[in-house]
Image (tube, rainbow, N blue to C red; front, top):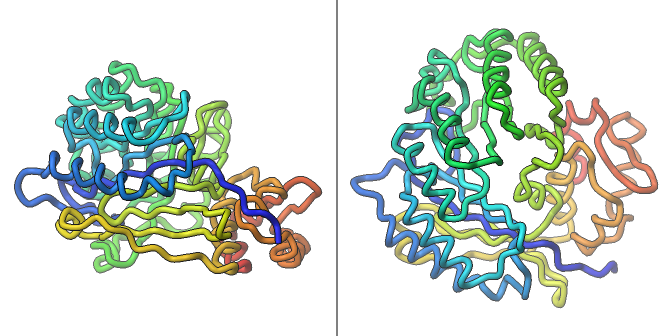
Length: 378
């Protein structure tokens, strides 16, 4: 049995409130009833982290990601208290990347300078579209002017690492409109884009009342034209829906995809923790409802079976365009290569995977049918 090694460690913080629930959203997000309980929630997050400290195992945090929900609804002072509390409890790597998700609403944008002062180094803006009809179709609370203003305000606040979240394949969207959103983002000079197709998920308003989406031919045109355009602008499609210029990849997400460890704190947060001594990998889950989490932030833990380890690793690592180094599988799962190589070989014969002496990665065809590729390992 290969030795299970302790991987890099990240911290995920979930802030579950949004001004309004978007009709396409299936994340753990909730509209607040009255004033946000900032102070109580930050206190609970830090108590949650205190209980999670045995999982650190003398590691430094390589990244922190504050997601939601809409974390930018919290004041800069609250984010500062949170990050100060984290630093008091866990050592941070000198180059630790700290990301905060933000919406372009005017109230949130006014806090950007404060977030930077609090120690946030990377801002991820949930723009989705720069065009008013598309924003209205998506039920977004910000408008097109606010979307543009938010990017400019983030840059003025000193952020050099900015991600713009954009959706394509929106209701009634033609390729020209999708490309225009990309052009607007590129005009700002940002170095990272999350660009992904709108999908209709269960337990959403769109699932109950589906909008009319572009047909498959239009979606294919949007995808191919968009990928060509961002490549011309110097971006690499390093992960299924993530595009970055050299050196600007999201470090936190890379740790996910490379099957690193992460402590998850906050309502509904998930984590993954490795224990080499006991040869265990644990999945952790926190209470989903904010009121329940505020009352008790304890974790549920589940040890991953060998089959789940293999499936989870492939689900994540094969999202990366570069795939994974052969040795990483044994290091991060504690399983022998023989547990996946026969399946990988069959997929390679079908033209879906590349398997050489150093790496395993999807082919162009495999990326188009990634769900099928991953399902073979589950």
